[in-house]
Length: 375
Image (cartoon, rainbow, N blue to C red; front, side, top):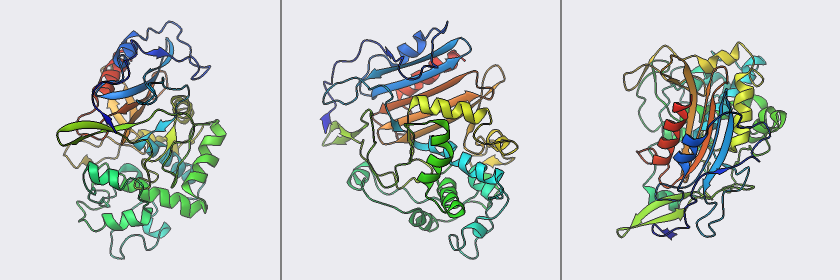
């Protein structure tokens, strides 16, 4: 553990990273707002940040902070990171590919594809409802506080265990009635991919998306709690006896969030994936429309639905919509965002010290504000 006190000297400014993709050239883009948003790391909020932004004027990618607090070394080029719930974009794409091939019916029942997973008297849940967060399948009660999580970070879960644990809780609404953002629908969707293809989720991610697109940094870790390849360490702030320490959270089993929060990637890979996806080169029409269509139901909080298959809709001031997915795992925040035509895109990874806290990291807030100002 590292006391939350003196740390490696902050880098005075963000470092331009021209090795993160030959296709990323600044042109006339002024990256000053993004540079300022991530300058001064590490600090109490985050130990590093990586950002890539593309506008009609050009593209900029850069880093700030350190690879790890022990050495104070800079974040390596092509650094990999946990993308958290950005995983759901990959999972939705896999399911929609199978639908395009006629191997999955989006209106078909989960009970038909995965017999025995849900109780015999459970209302019919469709595949589309899994992707839209409208299935109503309850989630497990989060087990324990951060100290419990740390003590159990190497535990291994199976997707079936997670579903069974969730079903111990009452169902808040019937399938299709409301939208409630959870991991559960995507955990079940991962099981669906495996059942229909006869391969593991990790194999299908590699075979259908990573290899065809040349994504060298993108993979599903399965049971491996490590991040393979170059990466920045993630840290979690923990208060013990009144003293806040940073605990290294880099090595951590992701088996509690299979197909919903476990993928590892890099900025360049995420940008390549999003560009190809939005251009129809990953999922064809008409299935691709599912990723840009909100279900006609209310959110459980009472507002309109915000989530499509894999993405969420963020209205911009000019009337355009930014299609976004954020993610958080202990030690890591990530996000992807793009306009439908791909002219404006942002990807980031921030090793925030309270990545799963109720308040979004100040660094992430600064990056988002700067990026939206450049949209």
